[in-house]
Image (cartoon, rainbow, N blue to C red; front, side):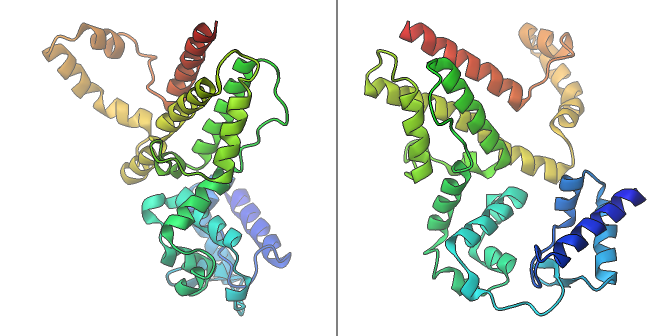
Length: 293
């Protein structure tokens, strides 16, 4: 524990001395430290205390722990990219429900009204966040020639993006899709991967929507799961274990043989989102393959 604590302090001190973290910049929160270094919250808190004792950081109300020193005026340094990046950090860590223009401004150390010179409002900010998140998806520069392999690879890459940004699934609309450049680029690539088949462009569009809506549908559970875990302190497996007795009573009382076999006689069954994604992706591709054939 001592080695982990000193390593964290040394790394954050290096970032400050190298100018990667400037006066007024937020340093990683205790929760962020636990994720980045894989340590206990007590270790992260101890690292924060050591940095304050060295005079390297200070606590700023409404903002958090920041690098000490005269914080430069940064209104003129603002850009849409910096604002969107701050908003994504907040949504990744706390969820979209905690996102506000005021919180983004506090994260950047500027007045709230200064944001509106770059981002007209919350709706525009969310649209830019979606576009930036989808922009992280790296589609291959060319198709492999095997449409199923291309769709599978792109589906997995999209699932990775949704897991990295749990708020993304619940923020995107299927019936009123957000027409961002990167969303359109993804759709174009998916439809193009089917170019070697006999499918019409309408059919290719329907396949693209089907695949995207499946991945997005499973991903829409990621943020609620993260919130539930944060609120209860229980992982999915721990929560299921805690409910096992109640499930057992319900199954026996109402004579449900399928659930009895599943919950009471299949101890290795795990209702996991990754398992659901893998199963669903394979079955969707199976169905498309039969249809195309």
